[in-house]
Length: 424
Image 1: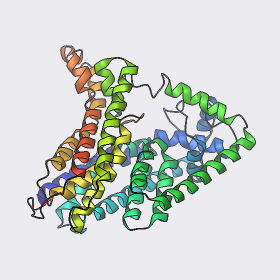
Image 2: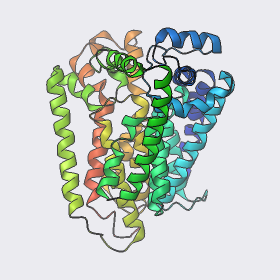
Image 3: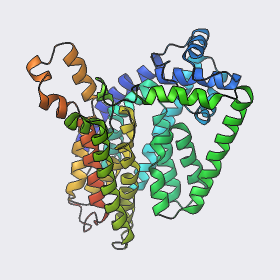
Image 4: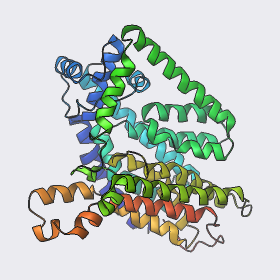
């Protein structure tokens, strides 16, 4: 299986360079938006006014197709502000390099968490690198200059610091993950709560409050009505705007609401079903963790089980909240657990995750939508209920399947120590 891992790695690197790095150098439209907003924040101007953002973009030579989607919170803009001292072309490269360093660090710490030896003869190392780099959500996020990549990587770094019993460092990393992408990092807090990591959470709260106070007080001095301006823009964005999963191009979403709504057609019923599913999964998880007993003294087994728990609680937040395709990068926790588990066990749940992740090797729903508009997909298929209601919404269902697989793995010992699969 080592040869297969190298073949996957070669394909992954090619796609990562073309779809991720190249597009990040040329486009990075989301970073362009945040760059303009951060400039407005540093000058005490309205960072949510489309007119103000367009004027800054024209002045700074920023090209972005998302300038009307300015809803980033002040503390996020404060985190981006250091990049605004650089001319935009240089800042774009600096942000890309930051993301590449963070992605590399994320792969390293996730590999450490599953016991990778970091040798080119260790198939787990090769498969982990390949299966992370080939993920289209990561490539898309990198190409868009998205903040999600930094947030996911920082959550992985927080988990690594926690695993090494450094709660202060873990708290800082977790706070920074929330600063860059609050709703993406939110559910990971459940893991720290259930593990009673009070020092970690205290440090994270202090860092977060520091960012919040400094960013808002500084803005309030120059723009007292900033909150009204932000809430007005956020309302337009969330109510029938870019965050509306019922719109025709809702295929960009990975939250379960989009998939359920395709079946039931009613927004209130959709949200009731989604929250019921999430609530039921959380109740089962809490019940299992209340009876949490170490299943033996095997360090590798305990390490993998803990990663499954952290991955479940990090990923479950993808289901009920507004999340776009690149936010699905959080599945790296599940993939790392699966790669580590299949090396020592015949776990069906690990294989379920690995197979499900193949559905994210290409931006499938986006490609189907383009092919439908261009008439490549026959009208008899594109207008069929099964195609629109199930095929176009396959991504949220795969994420739900991964979450269920992690939940099932929580209470299981990954194996009896026999290496049923020699390499992966």
